[in-house]
Length: 322
Image (cartoon, rainbow, N blue to C red; front, top):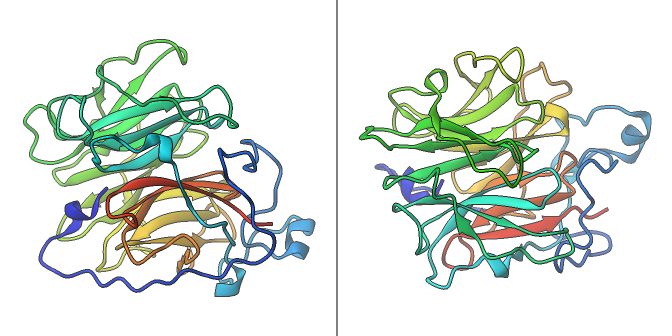
């Protein structure tokens, strides 16, 4: 979700600084140093003794307990020739498929879903292609790809809708065609409903809903992956008068990366059933411009996000420093 979608009648004040990185810097290159999905690693920001003892991260950890990241790297091979904006990155667990939102030439509408693939994490991303079977002549945004790469949730105002609603498409394999998008009525409302992320078990879905001037975080659950969703509930402990959106769960649901106004934040809790503690800005990822739409490994060892730091929205990647 870009800043233009969140400008209503108030000026957003951005005040962030790049944090000093500690320890040995990892060279990102083409992702060579990023651990594979599912690799064993302590939760981001944990004290070494807590990690060794298997304890959950401290939800009230001070600022110096935040994870340290290498300097974010622009994913240059995905930059469009026409200088159009890209955001909303969402990846498969093996990090061989990346889908995102773009206004680049070659799409169906003004804002479309594009995807890029690669054979291994040591290779550069291939040329992105639009998902023509999913895109309409209206707006497609808020992309959430299931970790197996076989289900994709997104938001659209197609079919003369006055607001963004939630849709889903499926396929049988990575090489199969996507199904015709289905409207997910239980996740949609009269307000803008912007999909953010789906948990690994596909039983928890995060979205942002704009019922008034600003977006707020919501979460929906279901009993099993094939069941219908329960009505989304607001994450009241994290919502404020500012914009909150782009939630992505980490640390088996004990952490949540999200955007507040124009900065990436990390909120933590000691177990998945509890309320989140007050979030902290991920200063090592934030810039003086808009930073948002994070996708992350469960332990935050690898993060992809969207940033306007270069003058236009682009996709960046970073790794956790050990």
